[in-house]
Image 1 (cartoon, protein in one colour):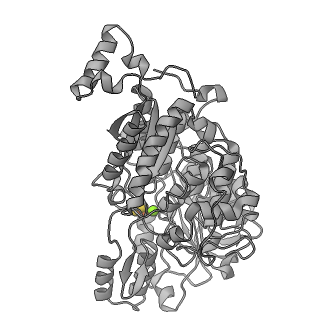
Image 2: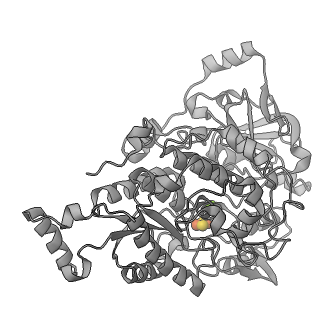
Image 3: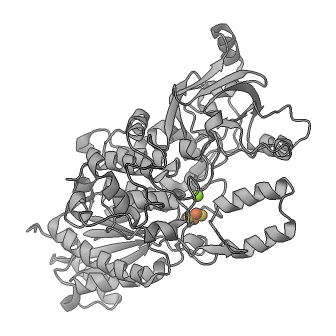
Length: 572
Ligand code: FES
Ligand code: MG
């Protein structure tokens, strides 16, 4: 328990005219000093928005959080933030992740807040909040909105995103009628909440829990489960205690906690996007997560969770099987259990009683989905700073592959030609998409799961090696190499590949190589021209000028601390 004065007392406790003004502002909202004086002010950052269906239950949760804050002796003040909805935002919600992080950090920094509750759900809202809050470094707890109810189509459960991609390929290859496709549309999203597969949203909220920023067992609770409201109330109670304990995010975001998160990501068979987000989140505390740390830890962490898109079950089954605490419990021997969490206890204490209730959904270390993790990092002349492949969702027969490049210069080029019957492509080709990276678009969209060309689908080919400087949705799958760094628009060699060049992917050897001699590479580099951009002003311009490459987390260069000392929170 701290005896330090509350940060908010700098606004409210003085006797001068500024303090009077601040107190009268609270009175204007109907708060009497008898109610709030001396109590911690809890900011509730709400990313509710009707432009984001995934976060639409956050208003109800905010009310329950407030109940908890008041019951524990705090003053809750809710504030809106930008919301990032994957479905609607173009070209990608990722373009705005850093903007949301700035919104969160600066709102916390500039206001009389002692502790923060972060209400998140859809993919980017979770890391954006944690990045901003990590820089502000007050006592912080996060709560998600939860996965949406699982839909059912013709007797089969259907998962958000993943089953849509699968059935879309069925439509394209003539196995599914348009009528059935329309019917699927009415069945696949049966309520608000996050995608109910282990996509980016569920991966990131699971990792928030594994990092120790969310109460144990909460992340996978379904959006409309009444227990989520109770969890919100508990979250509200807990943040007040955390302020009294001065339990800041910097005590939770440690190198050991991030190692635990990387292992959890691997065990989940989670989204490749988490690699970029974890690097960015850790970077806010000056913790370096090189890509090879992901590869190293993934290799020694079995892939355990049998959830779509890497496995077969959906998030309802994951929760029933014990959720994140059960995964962490299985991983116990590999984790650093003394990491402090928002409960005030260690990770080890939090999961002492946890276990898997269904070993087909959450597998055991002795009988995993795969022994050596779910993702790999490849490097080579095409990706000197690395690229990522989700091995758990790739085809084993393509893990070692050499094929001729079919190059799409950008997304529009790909859309225009990928289904052209004359495209010179066969099952051994390597599809290349470039100028789809952080600076190239800008915004690093999820275009990396290039569709299998129509003519190959018709021949029964369902997977083909695809490489790009883009990302892919956490709900996607296939033998897809992503996040190639440096990207084409940052002078990466990817920009120099031509049709017919030979490309080698060797996942076991961790290699991605363009078979060209040095003289030809020099010649092509000399001829290379940066892609034109129409973004000459505004936020996209700021983004192009300051975004870091994928292997550095795509944060803005000026948002990362220059030293440990610079991470310390500086009051306004
Ligand atoms: Fe929002 Fe999937 S689109 S969680
Ligand atoms: Mg997504």
